[in-house]
Amino acid sequence: NYHETVENLSTLADVCIDGTLAYLENDFGKKYGYPKDRNNIIRHMVVLAVGKLGGEELNFSSDVDLIFTYPDFVAQKFEKKFTCVEEYYTQISQALIRILSDVTEEGFVFRVDMRLRPYGDSGPLISSMSVLENYYQEQGREWERYALIKARTISGESANRRNLMQMLRPFVYRRYIDYSVIDALREMKGLIE
Image (cartoon, rainbow, N blue to C red; front, side, top):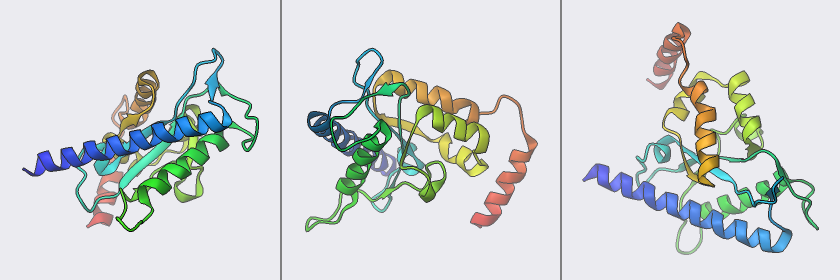
């Protein structure tokens, strides 16, 4: 059954991404210290799946479209290597992408596509949740709104996952009908065709 296959493949991707991230965060934490909030609680990255993975429609030729973020109010002074928490999370993000997508003798796990993040390839690999929220409120484009319709979180603490989805909701689902959205959809459909 097609639907069962794409759902199972999406679950496999979720587990691979979440498990690899947990390993990397633990490894980095042991080496360099753990990022903590004001209450001295360790804070983890949140991975947002968009595209086919977000919609649990991953097939064997799909890449995984991801957006990385981390909770605000994370403060940590690292003994060495990192000057700030964004640099720390960026290194973890780069390692995660490498592990998943580098081709070895056995092949690769999943191709990772990060172009759907804010500012695409020219933007930072990871942003805080407040930076993400400001971006979508001030600069979010129609195609990003459509990409986020199927978005779902696949890693991170449950409270941060809920907060992220609640933060994205006003951007994805506008309170009032905006007829310019219909024109934008027509234009996008024309480009696709």
